[in-house]
Image 1 (cartoon, rainbow, N blue to C red):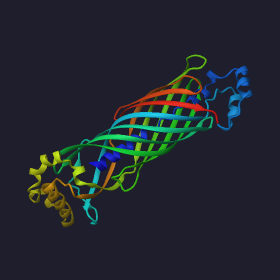
Image 2: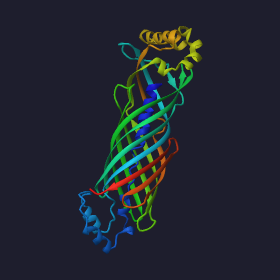
Image 3: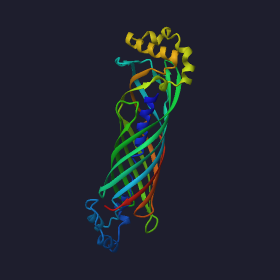
Length: 337
């Protein structure tokens, strides 16, 4: 259903903003400390406002990255979602819970691109904002009272903010990242609120005088607001080709055991939907809905790497696996501030 696709999209696109690994990590490794001559050379022309206490960090030998950055990020994600407690109505009638409707295995594939601007406020703390667009294809299986599967595409836009904290442990580093995002979709009454928490532990390698390579292993948790309200045209929720497959199972719906257990207001909703489907495929019927949703598996694993070509340019890639699969590619440009 279109509303379900919206929810999955909201969860997925937030993953694209949660990758907070930064070149500043290597600045905290004692084994990569600057020599006294290098410290003096950098401080001689150092005029950055950020990060705060940056001069003091350099004096202690930390090779800080340029504090501000712009990132171009592309991401592909496939994940599952659980749907429950669905309620429906038509027109101005109140929502009626329809417990007879249950769902099977639902999955979504999302392709998204976003821009992210970040600033290291402190040598160990970064703040960032992001905005982007996404395209999603979602497959939803309705298990009962009638089993059928629908698959539809849709687009969305989103924006968010986040924080990244990092610390070095010799040549190793630890990163914690959290962000919040809001996804705006036409079929929802309000933007979907999402939150992503990710943890990474990795190691830095000095390739040469300019290049650094960071590699890491981590975990990510995706969560979002559980209750969603909206409206959708019935023909979008149940495409015409699907209607043809289920018509014969709808013609005598009043004789079905699940239908007989409904209350009169619930029967009125079902009757309206069934009549429209049988008569015209639902082309002119708008359904109001309410449901709860959650990722099938909130946590997944991450493995990735980041290559700094120099102080300004870096390229990052990350793969997600176990329950949620993803592939990310990130090109970053950094500058003084």
